[in-house]
Length: 80
Image (spheres, helix red, strand yellow):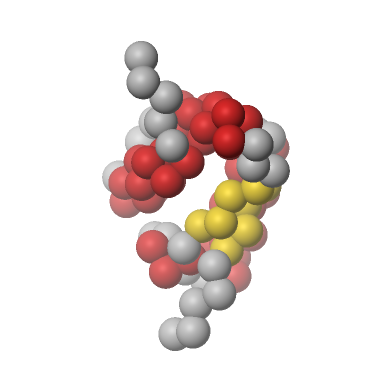
């Protein structure tokens, strides 16, 4: 099986979020694997691509991912 890059897994996560969090835990596990393979400690997510792009939605995502061992940061969007 080919190892996915962090960016590929993030694309899968964005698609999962659009599909009512379908298989999100599997994608988080893949993200952890991709991050450990590349030596990353955190991942930057484009907040503009989130379904619920407000403070509450971002904090909920950070909390959910943190409980599963992934530190999420958000890109600085100028269109807020």
